[in-house]
Length: 197
Image (tube, rainbow, N blue to C red; front, top):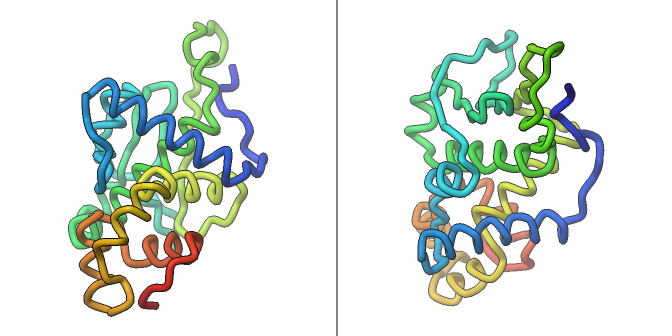
């Protein structure tokens, strides 16, 4: 039984943004939440996708960081316990990793196959995310995470109230919406918003 799909498909930004927006709308309806930044990623994962989030040690090859992985058969996102201190120092990294794993769940996991029992294939499929991996599936998951954590409409509305040209203003905004400086920099560039670089 293969639960992974579309690993080499390059999805357009429109498709990824639409899928991320659908999740946010579903969460807003179900939880009676008015969409705002920061996106409550942990709650969205648990209540809309019915996925668990766990910290556990993930073995890393020498010189390679693995922030997290998803185990579709267990419906579990695992954050690498070996990097708890890094996540604590940069909450935006933890949140982006969660959004990235959601991207895999939405775009790369055949959830219909998960519901089909199998007598022959008991090996769990896992998507492991290595830092610096530039494969198609990783780029798709990264873009999905950016759209989920920094939706266009909410970002543009919020940016009317914040200065992101100055260094301090840029960092304050990143802290407020709970994303890393690098993720915010990339997202603002894609939105065509002038900002501190």
